[in-house]
Image (cartoon, rainbow, N blue to C red):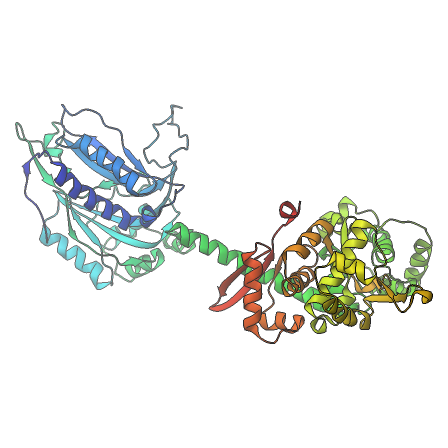
Length: 604
């Protein structure tokens, strides 16, 4: 067991301060790993110098949120200030909120930079103080922990030992030291009972125990300048779960009457714990969000699955979530408001016939509580359908918002957008890439410049392809009735005009792209890139968001032969700043997410 003898208070040279700085930095970064990160942490650590020599000047505590080079430079200055002075130096067991204003009982504001019971936040260690104990006695105490499979960092303090159990996670329970010390005493450990609050500071290794210089201290020696080096006598980097430590100690027989109530011990299992590193905390937060997302998606998938089964007359999966919830049934009190909202929505936004609306709302009536009978539904739908209202939907009342959630009405606006009927995606895999370019270019010219009919010459002006490529790729559009042609003038020969087919089943829905963005995409993307982007717009429901389809599924929908080609294609869109591609491992299974990037600024 390594111990040291008293020496005359030394004055370190620069090389010795370098060595001291290195040892203290390693120790602090080991007990508080977040100090290793090159990131600002919310909580600080304190090194507190306590003056023992009456002639020593007052020095403020050193605080740090991390220990990068700049912070170590400041720590060096701190060590230079205490160099050769009669101080004992301590470190805070808890990380704390430096800027939190704390007041004493009598209302005075306490000095910033010092840990106390009000600003303490979390700890990464369980410390023990074995004061006034011989090395042999301490070894017996240490053996008890070793039999439990617990290794500790041990520090010789000059008049005893302090041991530290490193924890796997930060513990956000400011009473944890009190519970820990009580349990140790209950099991017969000869520890100092005062190690019980979050304001506790412990002696820092690589400094000096200078109590012998303090006239008020029992170790004071008249005329002596001897101090005792504080050194590390045992080192470990093993870390433990706080609950595991308590459970192991609990297996030992009680030596004294219960110091800690069994109910108090059980609360240890419920304490808040967080990863030690910022990166680990962020990853944990991401995983929690992903788990919540998957649970929510599973819930929504069940909703869509049920809705699709109940309402085959409408594309249920493409409806906004709020409207999906409406169709799952409405409680009494807002049924009339919901009915008056849905009828104009189905009529004017989706373009459904009276018969189809009646069929849909008859099912809705059966889902309501209490049930609305079929005769009542028919009567009300026919009455409200006769109104010549041009509104795309009815009034969305505050009561409906509370039940169904937010509904973004701007997404229903077709103004300033290219409207691509979803019939486009029926044969999407079989349509050549340049067919998509031609089709989009015709839509843009129609919406932006008011052009409706195009001859070949005009088409060649709006899209940069050769005549042969144009004629070749017009053919699939004509076959799928996405584009219609008509003879211009028989007297002028067999020349034709082409126009976008304006007739499509509105109940099948549509995909919208702002005109300026569509125009920008047409100029910046190749045919295959454009085809993929338009599909991702449809897959994310015109609202942005995320697409989780596998490369195999994407290749199938786009008519591509290999997943490798899809990987390269999605990467090109990522590199061009059109989508964000990210691969994550969820339960050790890689998933790639595609997010549409807001292109408003680029297109403006």
